[in-house]
Each structure stands twice: as C-alpha cells, then as structure tokens.
Length: 108
Image (cartoon, rainbow, N blue to C red; front, side):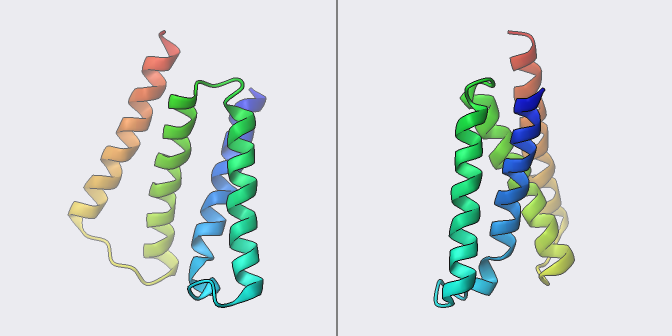
C-alpha cells in the first residue's frame, strides 16, 4: 500500500517538474533549473524506493505512462499545446498499456 502512495507522489513530483520546464528557459534560469532538476532527482529517488516492493517493469511503466499522459493533459489545459484525436488516442493507448501491465502483474 505505501509503495503505491510513494509511486503516486513520485509521479506527481515528476509531472510538476516537467510542467515547470518552460520556466527553466532551456536551463538558462538558475532558480527554475534547480527546481526542475531537484524535482526529477526526488522523483527518481522515490521510484527507486518503490521498486523494492513493486516490480520495476510495472513501477516504471506506471510512472512513465501516467506521467506522460498527465503532462500531455497539462500541456493542453494550461500551456497552450494542441490536442487532436490522434494525440488523444495515443494517450489512451498509453493508459491502456499501463492498465494491462498492472493486470498481468496482479495475476503473476
């Protein structure tokens, strides 16, 4: 149970760091660059803790897949990025893949 909570926190931190990347301005702004790099470092450390309890193939797929999907939604909703049917369908496939990996892991 605690591993799932830590995984959710790791995803949230990674998503926040990624959403702040534009503020780092290509890593030319020292403050925002430090925030982004620190966020990525914390997220990876949390993921490393999580893989003690959850298989790395599942933990990483969830971390990367959910993070990718959430960042895409944030990009669309708050950062002025475009969304079309192909992009939305591709994100749905990522989510389905994560769900599939979790189902397989739960039955092995």
